[in-house]
Length: 84
Image 1: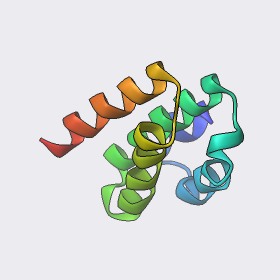
Image 2 (image 1 turned 135 degrees about the vertical axis):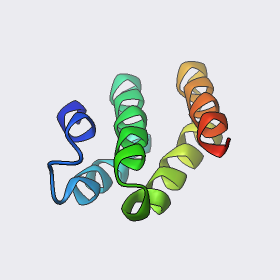
Image 3 (image 1 turned 30 degrees about the vertical axis):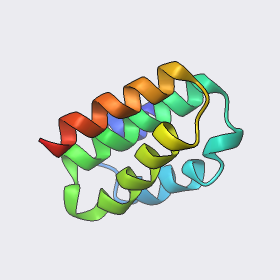
Image 4 (image 1 turned 60 degrees about the horizontal axis):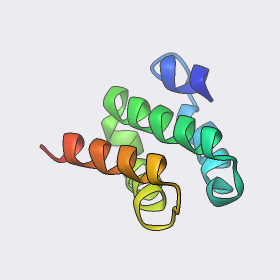
């Protein structure tokens, strides 16, 4: 997951690969959720036109559907940074 986010501009189907993991976001371990969140934000910063819906989905999952305070807080930080 880290590699997809880090090298998103070189991976043609990076969004599709992350979406596969995001579909099971709520069942994943908290560390995996944090990495999915970070990788999706990195993808959005590198390919904003192709990943807007994906980043919105993962931010919503991280902030509204999560009980983990670390994940929720990081989701809110990313959301505020991206909205400015």
